[in-house]
Length: 593
Image 1: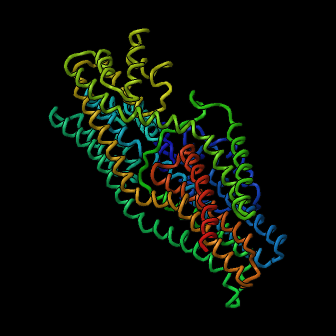
Image 2: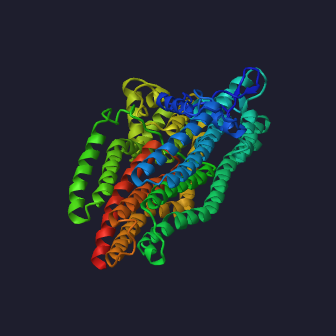
Image 3: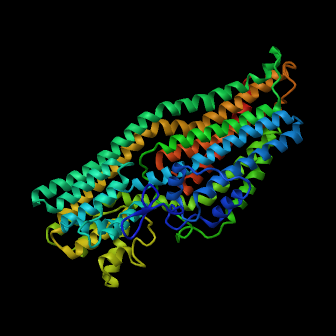
C-alpha cells in the first residue's frame, strides 16, 4: 500500500482500491458495520471527492469512498435529530431546536468529510516515524553486502508497519528488472517526507561506488534521514505555537471567564436561556475544539509512535470485567463523597468523570506497564550493540560477545540478552532463534526496534569479524535516533505540557471557581431567571470533562502519536484529576468569597 492509497499491480501499474487497512488487515468488523448502517440513512448519494477517495484508499480495504461519504451524511442526520428532539421536548423551542439541529448536522457532515483525511494523515505520520530505522537497516546490509537489491529486501523483511510493507511491495515488483525497488518506493513517499528519497538515493548509489565513497554515502544517508526528521518536527513545533495559543485562549480561557458573567446578563435586559448555554458549552465548543485538534494533528509530519500493546500480550490480562466494575465502584464512592462536601448537583458531573477515569486506568494500566518495559529495553540497545560490535570486531563470535555483554549490562536490555545467552547455551539455539524465535528472549517484547537489532546480530553471526564495525555504527545510529526523539519532545513540550495541565488542572480549577462566583452573584439578587445555578454548574462541568478528554488526546497525539492504550490511560488519569480539581475549585472559592 502506497501513501496515496494505491496498490501496485503485477505489471507495475497502480489502481485505486477499496480502502487499505491501517494495520493491513482491514477495519474492525464492528466499525465497518456501524459505517454501513449510517450509510443506509440518507436517501441521496453524495458526490465523490478525489481527496476523500485518496484518504479512504489508504485506510481500509472493507469500505469504499461512496459508503464513507454516505455514512458521514447519515451521521449528520442522526446528530441533527438527536439535537432537535430533546430541545423541543425539554424547552419547547422549535425554532431554536431546528436552527441548532441544522448547525450541528452541517458541522457533523463537514467533520465526516475531513475525518478520513485526518486518519490517513495520522497513520501516514506514524508510518514515517519508522523511516530512520528502515534506512538504517538498508545501510547496515549495504555495509556487509553492497548490493541495493539485498539491502532493500533486508530492510523490508526486518522492518515492521506500513512503511516496510510498502517497501516490500516495491521490492517484489522490481524482481527480475535489475532494479532494487528503493527508488520507486522513495518516489511514492517523497511528497510526505523528502528526506527519505534523498537518503535512499544515497543508499542505492553506494552500491556502485568505491569502498571509501560507499562508507561516506551510507553515513550521509543516515544523517540525511535524522536531519530531515529533526527539521520537519522543528518547523512543525514552531508553527503549532500560534494555533495552540489561540485554541487555549478562545476555546478554554474566554469561555470559562464568560461563565461568571452569565448571571449579570439580566442587568442589561438579556436573558440567556439554558438551551443556549447547553448548546454553547456542551456541543458547539467541544465540537470546535475537536475540529481544531484534528487540524493540528493532521499537520504533524512525523510521529515516533509508542509500541502498540494489545490484549494478546501475555502480561496483559484477558479479563475485561475489572475495568467496568472498578469504574462503577469509583463512581458510587465519588457520588457519596462529593454529595457531602459540595452542592448536590456536583455529583452528577464528577461521579461519571471518576467512574470513566478509573475504568480507563484499570483497563489500560497493564498495557502501560508493558510499554514501560519495552521502552526500557530499547533504551539499552545502543550500549548492548556497542559492546557486542566491539568484541566481534576483535574476532570473537557473536554468541560469545553476547555472553560477555551480559556481564556489563545491568538494564532491562541486559535481562533480555541474558535470556538469549541462556537459550544459546541450554538449547543450542542460534542467535536469531534465541532472540525472536517462538520462545526467544524478545517473544514478549513487542518492539520493532529490538527485533531489528536481533536481525542485525543474526546477520553478523554469519558474516563474522567484518560485521563488527557495522554493529558499532548501528549502535551510534540508534543513540542518535534516541537523541532526535528527545529533542523533538523538548520542542513540543511547551505546547503539550500547557494543554495537558489545562485539561487536568487549570481548566477544572477555573471552571469550578467561576461556577461558584456565578452562584454567589445569583444569590445576591435575581439578576437572571433563565439559568439556575445548578443547571449552569452541570453544563460547565460537562464542558470541563470534555476539555479533559479533548485536550489530553491532543497533547498525547502531538507528543507521541495516537495510540489507543496510551491515549486511554492518559485520558483516564486526566478525568480523575480534573474531577478532584473541579470540586476543589468549587469548594475553595466558596470559602474565599
